[in-house]
Length: 97
Image (tube, rainbow, N blue to C red):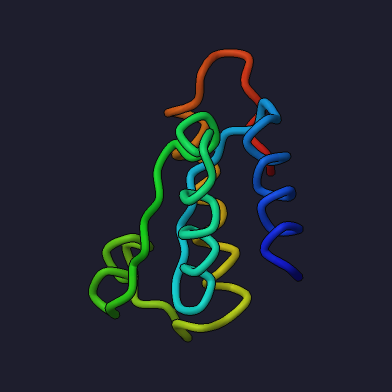
């Protein structure tokens, strides 16, 4: 995907009413830089957390995961981020599931 295409996608995200909390780890953290590099990120990103160390992930999940890199751990992170977004979002804004 070209830089022009990426910028267009990110601008589209920022121009939507969607607001989100992002919990990212590993290579997915690159997406945060892309989102934050385009004006309008403060309308979209409510909070971003990168629990990179094992202890940070344990504290986020409030348990030791069976595997740090797994679909189950990703699902648990997504649910925590969604619940946090519900608390931080503006009334009437869209918080994607």
